[in-house]
Amino acid sequence: MSTIEDYFTHACWRIQGVFEGHPECYEEHILPPRTRGNLRIRLRFSDQALGEISEAVLLMARELR
Image (cartoon, rainbow, N blue to C red; front, side, top):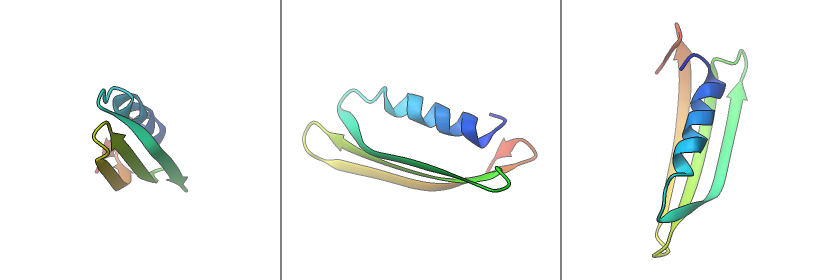
């Protein structure tokens, strides 16, 4: 992936493929100069379990770190 936007688009696409759950929260924030971002995802599963992911993403030399 070459941009933070590409990464967030891919992450959104992947969570839509979770069959046993649905997203309760999906937040993305792109920080200047568009090489850093924060992503927060909360999934509610059919058995009422909750999964939450929060990550900071850094794009360096067209590689995600």
